[in-house]
Amino acid sequence: MDTYSKLQEKINRAEDLEFGDILSKTIELFKKTWLNGFLMLLILVVLYIPFFIVLYIPIYQEMMEQIQSGGYDPNNVNGLAYTQSNNMKLMTLGITFVISLFSTFLIAGFYRLIKKIDFDESYSIKDLFFFLKGQYIPKVITIAAFSLMVAMLNLFLEKVLPNGLATTLSLFVTIVSSVYTTLFVVFLAFNPDLDVSSIFSLSFNLGTKKWLLIFGLAVVTGILGFLGVVACGFGILFTISIVYLPPYLIYKQIVGFDTVDSIDLIGKE
Image 1 (tube, rainbow, N blue to C red):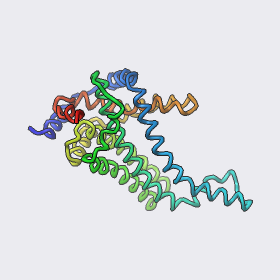
Image 2: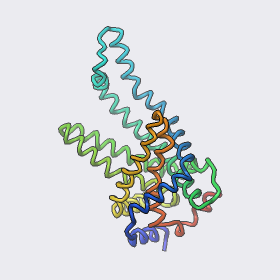
Image 3: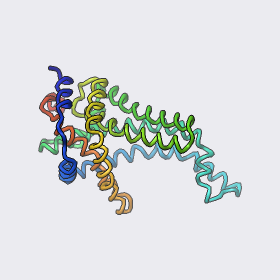
Image 4: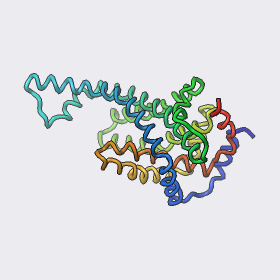
């Protein structure tokens, strides 16, 4: 039986998981991995900064022009954003793809690192960059493109539907798809030799079976992660990585790692 069939069989036979048990294990694992999560997020923030600067330069320029002409209204920030809305929407799509690309690269590596910490295996910060290897780049690009498709769908809904309905549907699409995009990265991390269609298929299967559990844990861990905001905002980088742990633990309990022994060999390349 090939790897895909073994993984599919395990997902099909998946038993119920306890929300409280996964949450408890998440907190315990976070105690071991928070520093590595901080380093991963810090790298992402550094990579994101230039793109956010590019995104908001048009608003800044418009604001400066209004200040110089004497027509600036500090209460009309939304008006400035609206002035640049068409250009910003196109730029946002491109930036969404780039951010998704960076995130997929590093978060997939982070999951490999988490597994090593969890099993008391040797690891290094280099594990974060494992998927920068050439053979994995097309898969990472394809997974990142899924987030771009969601962003394009939301933009389409905004154009063809009334504002209230478009906002509601966009939120629904984003929430539903978030579970699957997370699982794409998890399956890529531990099954890097599977083709993208198999990764998508397995992720949709597991995501559909455990959608409420995964989403519920994402909400709770998201709240816990945002507690870092109390430390002058910057503290969130130390805490928010907890949101990545429940999908790993769900994968570990349902799929496990015994059917993908090649991952250990890959790590020694």
